Length: 195
Image 1 (cartoon, rainbow, N blue to C red):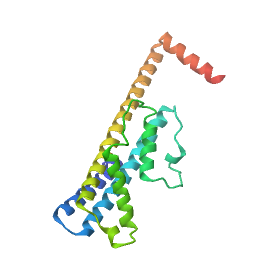
Image 2: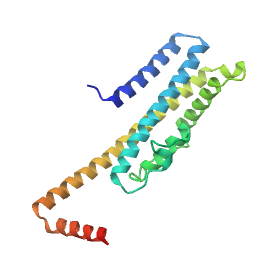
Image 3: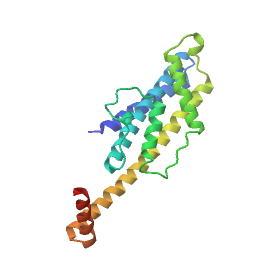
């Protein structure tokens, strides 16, 4: 059976592709608005997956507390852009050399797309419902920038986690083999914990 998370992401990607296809063959304003709504829905789904992944990985390192704003129990609303920035900041605690530029045009376009979606979701005039070709191009660019950024960060943190697992496995083998340095480290750690 397919992984539920993979199925979730595949569904979001399929929705975005379908909305892109509709806009490519349609000139209706309704299809343009639906594309914006679909893109932001996918961004929110990917950012939720991104958050869950980073929280899990960082929790496994047990070196940094996870901010309350990123916990599953968080009742207070946090915007998608704040969630993405906070999740990225948490990821940098285990991958400090990771570079993410929130000044890039991709981030600017993503923010613009979210504001447009909010405008068309809560319209106050006919102008609020208008989406231009440039708006569509910016939405595409911002979406793909975020998808690429989140994927790269998840890959980087997964590589760090894999390294941790390999180190722990090697340490376990050294302990099993009776390696004196590993045994000394184990005993010192237990003594320090008992103090």
